[in-house]
Length: 348
Image (cartoon, rainbow, N blue to C red; front, side):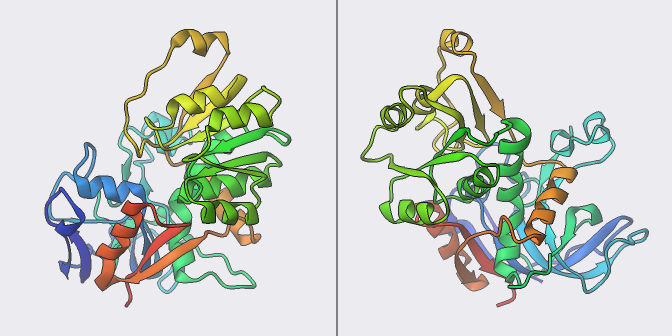
């Protein structure tokens, strides 16, 4: 099968399209999927650069998100059949540890991600547990393969952040950084579904205009405006109830300065760097809650798929590249040029 393979860490130039052995024949409880499209995430850039926690064995097939057609199923699989059109949930859990038994699959002690710890989705075939695939909902305006591939990781991540961890409520104000990225865009859509007011930031005025069209109540250019000062002015000096963070070092202090007393900061990433400082006196004096979040559990995934079936949470695709131009897709993501998800068409 053809795949996008990382031959060495250290840069996008280490990616190559090549033939590799087919994904394994599915074992008990597994399915093999013929991938049609794969969507990229910042996670994939970290893997390519060789940051800690990435691919441990090279060469390595990249990509966490994907959608395609079930090619074959292993023994004991009854909920999925060959020929089904499916999306893949990239978080792999063992379903046996104490956290899995409690329904918290993304807390699994053996939690792994496709494209990071396991072979990824930018390949013609992939074998995954059957409970990690979901039928693509049938909508009046049918989802494209690119949209189906773009759905799982960012939508599940944002749903858990806002609904399960931060408990966003109607009437609250949410600050979302970097609105061009997939998680922030999903967070915007989810926050509006929950009845919240959303302040979205970007350094690109065109992305801010798009955010307003998607429902953002207020937009700020964080390159030309001091976000915390603007937030205080917009909220009568109060601050926001929730900050959605995935940038890290570059925005951490401004995020805290934007929080109201009793506010919640929920973070799923650190694209600008993992080290941030904190005055603990501010934390306890203001009764802040700092919440970490990664992916989500099976029940949350089922809920976002159900919402997608109702026509909600439809993902935004920025651009689709043929598999032969996978490097260009990675370069666009690395430059931060995208508004929505960058997708690789594996079937082309």
